[in-house]
Image (tube, rainbow, N blue to C red; front, side, top):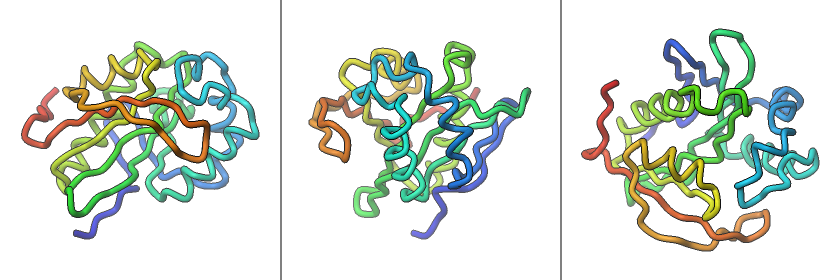
Length: 177
């Protein structure tokens, strides 16, 4: 099935725009806060050279977004779709982060709802990979209705760390407010 994993998505609170190479400095300004990465497996992503690797991979994924707070026009963070599996009818949502000032303000559920409402038109399952010590994100994905299904070693381009894999099926997703 052909579909875009980088459509513009929007609700009354947030605007998700395709991430562009010219967004690096503005997004790094958000990502340079050490607090964002404290519980993350790659907890030095606040460093410019480490974030640059992350950003380049986001651009290459062709599924990354910058998240705009519509009330201020500021970049609030980033998220992406990746690893579409046509056989499994699944995709991963992840690499999400927000400026600390948006924590606990409902931004993450708004963003994830937009992404899930859109992508469930094309897939049957969504996966989330969350660091074993990233308790904030674990709580956030369970609030979306995702269930932890396993732990696994992340062997990406950054340091290898343990992740938990969460899954939500289309038929379990309640897309009402």
